[in-house]
Each structure stands twice: as structure tokens, then as C-alpha cells.
Image (cartoon, rainbow, N blue to C red; front, side, top):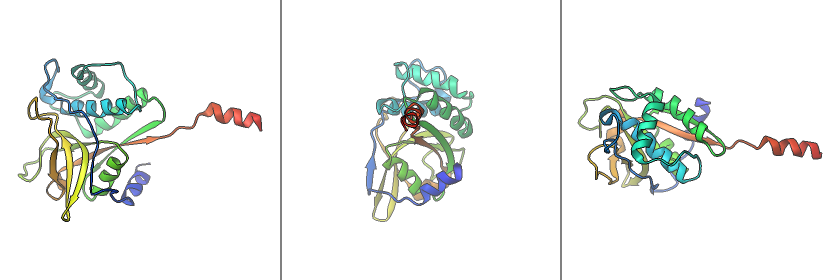
Length: 211
């Protein structure tokens, strides 16, 4: 499935020169968050879950942002030093399918290298992308050992940019950060979401009966 997923996205190109989807930013250090220093992964996941809930794709008990971050921290199994991309992939896939209203979800991780159009494809499909910056010491990278949420892209004068929301950086850091693709490409890992429609087997059963 992973190879099909990659091939499909390699074939796509951005539909727009500028595209941003509306996602609510959640601060990882909000009062009440149990482990604020290591909560960037759960906070990023919380932004995505809340967005998907608002779109009617998943449902969960109405929670305040802090409670949602704490619940996801436990369900994902975040360590005191942070969340791994592999664990986030497995646990988020389970959570989305557990809370799905209809359809089925897959979650895949991949290095960002040569995946700009795959990223744009996800945004064009109205799906945010969780982005991990693994530990690095580059001055060019936007961050290190940190999760953010990709919510848009821009192509301008042959330069490419990603729009991201940062769960850290202060309570009022709600602005959209535009980061240069060329500078950050080597230092990012993408967590892609994919939604599949699942046919209603009951309808299929009755159609066969009617024949």
C-alpha cells in the first residue's frame, strides 16, 4: 500500500500557486497540559484531529484543547523526551479509525526529499500534514526535534514555501509561518493522512438479494 501511495502522489502536481486550509493552532504549553516540554507531537495530532472532527470525518467526546492533548499524549504513548514518527504513525492510524464516522484511514511517514508535490496533493485534498524536524544542527532548518503542522503551500517566482502552524513558540504564536522548501527539505519527515471510502456492505447484500 505504501508503494501505491507514493506512486500516486509522485504523479500529482499542485493545483494552485497558493493554498492554505484553516486549522486551529493548539499550544503545547497551555495551562493544564501534563507534559508541556514533550507535547509537540500530541499537540500537532490534536490540531489534526480537531480539524478532521470539524470537517465531519471523525468524532470524539467534546474536549478542551488541553484535555485533547493529554488524551493523545497517553494514547500515542509519547516518551518524556518526545514522540517518534513511527509511533505517531501507528497510534494516529488506530485513533482515526477508532473515531472515524465513515471510511477508513491510513497514515504514512516518509522523508520530505522530493515530496513537495505529494505534500501539495494532501493540502489540495484538504488534509493537513504533520511535519517532524528530527534532531539536527542546521541553521537553515526551521526547527530541530520538533513537530509542526503543514496547512498550506505557495509557489512564487520559482521558489516554493510551506505554511506551517507551530505548537510551541509562545501562547500567542498563532501566525502562519512560511518556510522555504529548499532550505528545509533535507531536515523534514512528513506524516501523511489518507482517507478511503468503505462501501456499505449491507447495501451490497440487499442489491444481490434483489437480483
